[in-house]
Length: 111
Length: 111
Image (cartoon, rainbow over all chains, first blue to last red; front, top):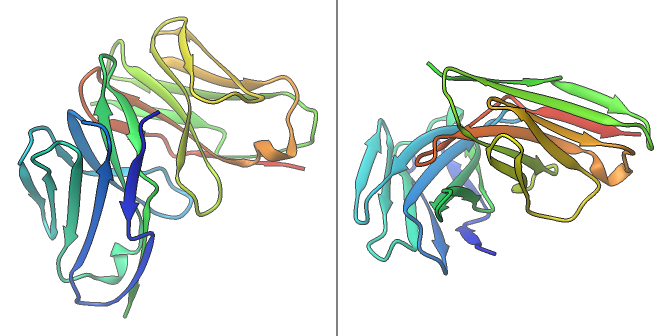
């Protein structure tokens, strides 16, 4: 089946630093999504990307849909303690647009 | 606006007992519906997805089953729980083209 490889698996950063994480796949996706999950909660959608090459921002977050449609990255600028959580990428494909999730990046911010 | 409800939030069940988790969506029609399981600190494993009433696709062989008796109702069941069924279960919905939106999750502990 389809797999999304997400890196890094985890990261510790200092408050105020910028963060970058990415997601790659051997398959083409029609849509790329980025989610954040707080402990004990369901993932919350951060950014959705619908076109190859699309660059979209949501506050301090910026995400891009790769030209090849097989990758995406998420950047967080000037990190703050509430950015802590697990970030998941996800891709949609197929006639029924099934959602496939990446393995997640666990982000810890040191105040 | 669309909302998704999932219950119960937490559940402790003995080995061998049955399971029924329910998920309902409001404010939309004919959504795609999903059940995911998440082990502690791990990624999201897709268990089942449904594109319509009575249409269920299983992603992994397991001790669980799913049903969609109504357009906006998705049920996850088991006849006899195993210890390995413990985890965080998440229901999600999406339009046929678009991002998935998650419920708050059910923390299941099988003892």
